[in-house]
Amino acid sequence: MSLDLWRRHQDREADRNWLERRALAASAIAAAVSLTFLASVVIYQSLPPTAPFVNGTVRQVDPRARTITFEHDEIPNLCMESMVMMFEAANSQMLASLKVGDRVRFTAEEIENHPVITRLEKQQD
Ligand SMILES: [Cu+2]
Image (cartoon, rainbow, N blue to C red; front, side, top):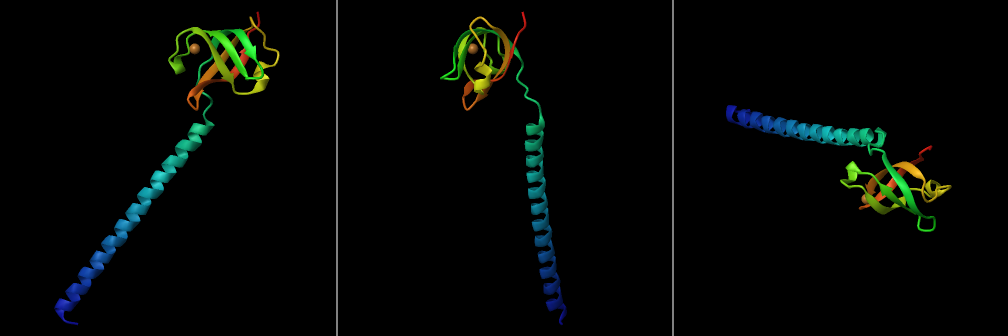
């Protein structure tokens, strides 16, 4: 092998090594990104609900529509002042044995662009 040929061979080897290293780095970055994403999904799902409990008084119950109207205190996570408004309940059990005038504490969260009651507890008088 002439010196020139040998040099070109060495250059090609170097190019190939560089490409291999770059491919390896790219897949390492891709793996790190997907791991980070997976980890954040797992952490997000394992966290308890963060919506704070809010006090309210039941003003209307509609079991067929699965809605409850509350006079409620401020709901900071929804940037909402105290008011009277209707909410959808996350499940129909929340409406069982609930009657107008009941004082409750509840959490409301924005789900698919509308506020939903996600937890509900009757207050003992
Ligand atoms: Cu409101």
